[in-house]
Each structure stands twice: as structure tokens, then as C-alpha cells.
Length: 137
Image (tube, rainbow, N blue to C red; front, side, top):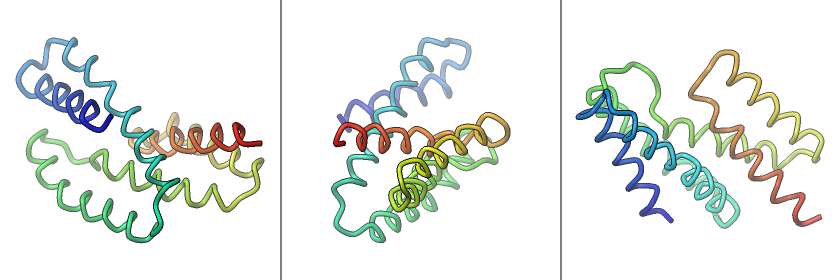
């Protein structure tokens, strides 16, 4: 699963850098994010040390930010910050009752539509969590 996510992300980035006018590369690359979303959720459910998991994501986000900005000539957070925000949202939502978790997920969704494109990820992870919770009721 992880190899498929990395391969589709590589296809997306190769298309962005070398073939920016050919949408086929970018379309194939769109498969990466849902796979990473599922992998992060599975890691969240299986980790024994949430603090360490979050710190590893923070370290990776910090290390990769400058190369990301230089490679793509952008000044926005890379997707690993989205993964970290998603993990924080999952941790917060898991401490709430079911109705409150739905509220958190919906809030992230509305916020992502209105202002911050990069924060869309937490909504995806929250819904993975909520769906998984419903499956075990």
C-alpha cells in the first residue's frame, strides 16, 4: 500500500515538474492522498506512542518544507503539515463523544471549503475515524 502511494506521488511530481501541461500525470497522482490518508489513520489506530508519532511527522514536515518550496516555487505548507494537522484533529476528535466528533469533522470540511485549501486533509482523516467507529457499534 505504501509503495503504491509513493509511486503515485512520484508520478504526480514528475508530471508537475517535467510535463506541466499534460493532466494525465496529475490525475494519476491524485491517488496518493487517499492512500496516505488511510495509512495515517491505520498508524493512528495502531501506535503505542502518539507523541512520538506526532513528533516524527513534525520532523519530516520541517525537513521537507524547504526542498518543497524550492522544487515547486511555492510558499505554502507541504502535504506533511496536512498529515500532522490531521493527526491532531483525529486525536482531538477521539476524545469527544460521537456527535462532537462529527461536529469537528464537519467544521474542518467547511473551513477547508472557505479558506485553507491545505487543511482539507483533517476532514478526510476524521471521516475515516468516524466511519470506523460506526462499524464497531
